[in-house]
Image (cartoon, rainbow, N blue to C red; front, side, top):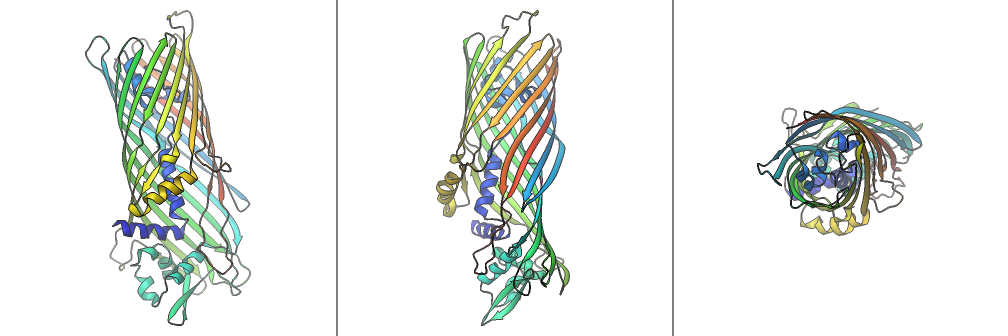
Length: 519
């Protein structure tokens, strides 16, 4: 589909849900935000690994950490994630939960054959974000309905022949909205001069509207990173490294919007349901450069610069509608079957490019018992401080919207966020105990939106003398609030109003298990 048609489709989807600008900005933020994954050890200490040499999780934060490894390393990590959402809409509070096993990390690290200060190469597959989610909210509202957008949109199209324009679904700006509503009798035409005007079946005889609304969103997928990491010890105190990282977005999402008529005044509508299925795929690339310096034996200082990830993103859309009215009964329609009953059209498609923020991380690690006295516990305290410049995100559908998104919407919506991660490990003989904390700052410029995420973590580990090791971690928290506007009504003179935003509060619990061997 050409960029022009893609933009028309975006406008159509905006009328059905909320403006594409807001929708795509939220998506850009999702793809730009990562979580502390990698090994269970790294997760247990809050992801504070930027100056921690010789740890698999560290090479994904600061590639210079690879230069510390004294042996080859092979490891594999799996995890479990549970999300609980508390959703408030129109005075109602609902809960939704979702849990699943997930892949976290696979890493192979190889040292070159030089005896002193060899070049260390690592190839790893690392899950940097998980999109699994389950959101449900509901409530009753007067003088508002998503169906009103459909008839207003049809009115704005200045329809002279409803069957010609709306039945075939050839106009991409209407296909996912007014066309489906017309086909299922959710909106109905009446002649007004040489044109047609429309009404919604949700409008009662006195044009009042009273409906019970519900939204159910189910999402899955994530971002998986393929990392090629190089690290080397340059001197007794300095370690340098770099990596090239290929990120793969894969997301599936289904939104089910339902409205039931509860108006005591007669209206033709019983209920209607709109199901939108979206599949998103993207490929991106970024670079990292890092260094770790040891001014004194117990202290490591690290610095990492990460370039933006340049993504190409492709989205496929499919919309289905079911409407039950008193006059026509139950009727269904879909964007997939727009030609006839046997011919399936291609799914509508939207392409765009995305540039995620620049990122800089400063790190420090203070080591205990560096002399290696086996009668005393060993350990460390580690801290990372990270800056994410969300104002530098860029979205591009083409030249027409490039400057609009970059200079106006992104900078007006987001800011630079600072993230703090801290952790500690206490090790005695073959056993280790770990604790961690992470706080990711809010990316939103609006102080009324609390986008911060706070995690608490802990874990245990065992490392055998023959090189085998196993680590277990538990991370809880991730308490985050966000607002979601189900739809915004197009401008109208009927007194119909926008719904309030739904408040969604998420709490995430993760577990991770890592098994590995050094050889």
